[in-house]
Amino acid sequence: MKQKNIRNFSIIAHIDHGKSTLADRILELTDTVQQREMKSQLLDSMDLERERGITIKLNAVQLNYHSKDGEDYVFHLIDTPGHVDFTYEVSRSLAACDGAVLVVDAAQGIEAQTLANVYLALDNDLEILPVINKIDLPSARADEVKHEIEEVIGLDASYAPMISAKSGLNVEDVLEAVVKYIPAPKGDINKPLEALVFDSLYDAYRGVIAYISVKEGRIKVGDTIRFMASGAEYEVLEVGIRNPKEVKKDELVCGEVGWISAAMKSIKDVRVGDTITTVANPAKEPLVGYRVMNPMVYCGLYPIDNAKYNDLREALEKLQLNDAALQFEPETSQALGFGFRCGFLGLLHMDVIQERIEREYNIPMIATAPSVVYHAYLTDGSKVLVDNPSLLPDPQKIDHIEEPFVKASIMVPNEYVGPIMELCQKKRGQYKDMIYIDDTRMNMIYELPLGEIVFDFFDRLKSLSKGYASLDYELIGYQTSRLSKMDILLNGEIVDALSVIVHRDFAYPRGKAITEKLKTLIPKHQFEIPIQAAIGGKIIARTNIKSLRKNVLAKCYGGDISRKKKLLEKQKEGKKRMKSVGSVEVPQEAFMAVLSMEEE
Ligand SMILES: Nc1nc2c(ncn2[C@@H]2O[C@H](COP(=O)(O)OP(=O)(O)OP(=O)(O)O)[C@@H](O)[C@H]2O)c(=O)[nH]1
Image (tube, rainbow, N blue to C red):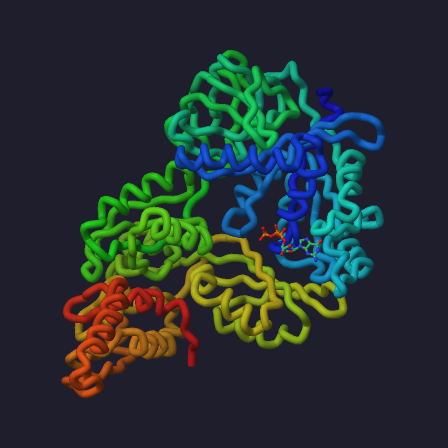
């Protein structure tokens, strides 16, 4: 295929605006494979991949399109992850493209992730092609949304296709616009190889498969390649494309997007954003944009049953094969025993991993509340990174503490601006800017501590705005804050897994809220249990869980032994998720109590 007839693009959108639906329609419209055949082929390869323990990722599909201009085109449709946790991965996937189809819901208009994605696409110098979707909806206001795109983003939307991805209406216009407006890749086949790694996955038989976009030169079977950032060298064993089935080829040349295998053992050698070149004729400079990803959020994962400790380690190791961003190391907690401290890119990443361990590996766990990474500067001049609040050094030794801050952009209908400003203030936000999107909506810009966002910020935002607010954020750096460790004592003993780092101005209300919340979550025992919150040994809040009255079962159910059994059975069921901390049985929810608190 001539390079001028290749088009490499992604679809970008705010969540639920119809990205996947449009991608499905495009797959059907391009004659790569017949619709029915495609489905069965896809399933086949998915089964195979399941057996091998890899997740199917339709991350780069090659499609053939016969355009109305009479020419044949090859499209590479590159998928992007759909969440702010994966901004870096999204940006690398976009870097593999020359253009982006921007899908905007005709009823919802522009939202926070619409803008965030547009900025990422512009950073990568992509041509952006706006598409108005869901024009079949009665609430669609396509012309207004077009106007919004022009006003807020500054794109010419006059030629934007107006489609219904659901019914297929006008979807062909999108393909024609891709041909017309998205530029062909520019590379030179005679230059040294420069191939961008934009994704990877682990295959138990072949090792790591790297997904690449060849920007300059060519890559073929038998080449010895070098990853310019990691320095790893391998001999290429296979190259190919997906259509969506895997198809092997002899080589990939500039402008093409596909995969390579080279018996690569570790995903750490194959970093997203790295540049592949050949050892024989290396490129002088790597492609721009490579970054090492560091986890932003940490939590402890502890098996409820201590005997499952090794199973948990194996599960984490397996997940890590496919997920270079996941980090973990063993840790011990006085309260919870042996477990792992795990690092994640964000809260969604954390939830996904926790869920997979429980569902796919069947290991019931206690997860501690997520924490960000604090920088503690000690009086002796040294600096300690603290990702577990219980390990914050002795206050006497600390000179000051810094915490990560994000720039948050919150898009919200006008009527909710007041309550949301109040929320941001409560969360220690610094107001930066307010941008009018149209007559009805604003984009509020705040700087907020990441530590407050990992608390209940997002849930509060959604409930205050009846679901209408959308949020996007990016890390902007570290700032000094007046922070202290707050310990929680159950029955007089500190429970290390419940320690949190709090701002001193908020310590009292938070201490009160946490103790009250724990009171509702921890079941009654045969004895009274005091719950206390303390900072540096000083108790700042306290409450009690009253003891059970004796013989409560006997009293309620008299001699009815079967009902009593049922009740005990039920309690046992509930206990699965409990961990004995000293003499107190603590349920999983309690460790997350700090996350879901209504303050005051
Ligand atoms: N009425 C109508 N609904 C649509 C249209 N396109 C998509 N939808 C619906 O909108 C919802 C979201 O569509 P998806 O394609 O899953 O959206 P997405 O952007 O891929 O969402 P994520 O995968 O969650 O990021 C689904 O229920 C679709 O059926 C359309 O043209 N008209």
